[in-house]
Image 1 (cartoon, rainbow, N blue to C red):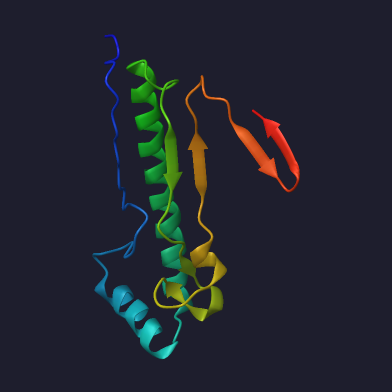
Image 2: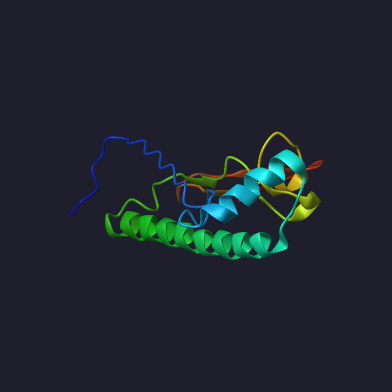
Length: 134
């Protein structure tokens, strides 16, 4: 199959790495809500959230890899600009909090930003006063 020549824009919004990580356990969800209201932190719930968060990061990673494989199969990977990022981070017990909300901690503000440029695009990286072409 030859790739189509007309440009495309595809936006994929994955919410796999979003709480609650164990919907079938309403007690733990209530503990998270209680954490936001009263600053009470149940460390058993934190451990469960860490495991659930890690599991969901794995699921999202698998999806991204499947998308990359599909782009390669269709012969458009080398021509594609791919950007992977997140809307926010997640607190998993840091600052005595679980989740995210109306607080501004580095764990919530610093998110990954991965960019893969098309093969034939020259990239200039500027770091301080140095500039290099990639």
